[in-house]
Amino acid sequence: MRLARFGDNRLGLVEQSADGECVRDVSAALDVLPAVRYPVPPGDLLIANLDAVLERARAIAATSPLLPLNDVVLRSPVANPGKVVAAPVNYEKHLAEVRGDADLHHDNTIATIHRAGLFLKAASSVVGAGDGIALEMLDRRSDHEVELAVVIGRRARRVKRTAALGHVAGYCIGFDITIRGSEERSLRKSVDTYTVLGPYLVTADEVGSPDALDLQLSVNGEIRQQSNTRHLIKKVAELIEFASSFYTLYPGDVLMTGTPEGVAPIYPGDMIEGTIGGIGTMRVGVRAA
Image (cartoon, rainbow, N blue to C red; front, side):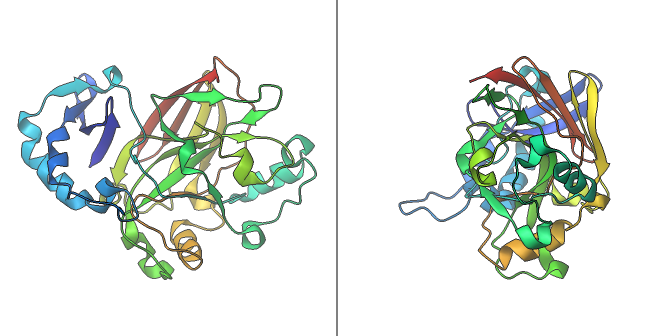
């Protein structure tokens, strides 16, 4: 299923109609979420109870209002990710690209993911397609990076890769926006609006294997990035195994799997379009903060 969060925290099921993609407003399904008190449990409440929400959503869908998807403002499908775990230089061609361009590496040592490990992005950087990207520090270069984003569905700690995909709630498109410079990645990638997730969450059962998905990014109609997740150095299951060997992953945590070659600057006024096979297409506008 395809689950959208839109407008003022509304919940919708995305459907294909003769007129294009539409969304069923099934916000009433949120009534099945348990009441919580301080201290609230770790993780995103909706993702932790996704099966119950989807069961209720299916039951009420037929009588729920149907809206054109283009008429709603799409938010991040995960409202409260505890953390965003990101994989650096996880495509071989992007590794070569970064090492060969001083405007990308800024004299930082660029190690393979096996040596560099993972890094964290601030959860406060997460927005949806409808929120757009607000560029900071316009005197510095900010680049686009398209990635497969993995949403964790249940608690994962020291999970073996053979069981890792069983901990995935679903997938979405991720834009990892990066200010170039000499500072640590987590600082330059944690600016507000610099993690875009969407356009909606596609449940794991609908995507199937995440290891052979085409992905593409264009800016103002010009294709800049084009690859397939088969070229990931560490694939999704191995990334989950790796991350969960260091810390606990909770429902709603997001794993950004890395970007292929073709990263380039973006500017206010640009329109970024990303597509991942089996998930869909996300269009995001760029503005000055």
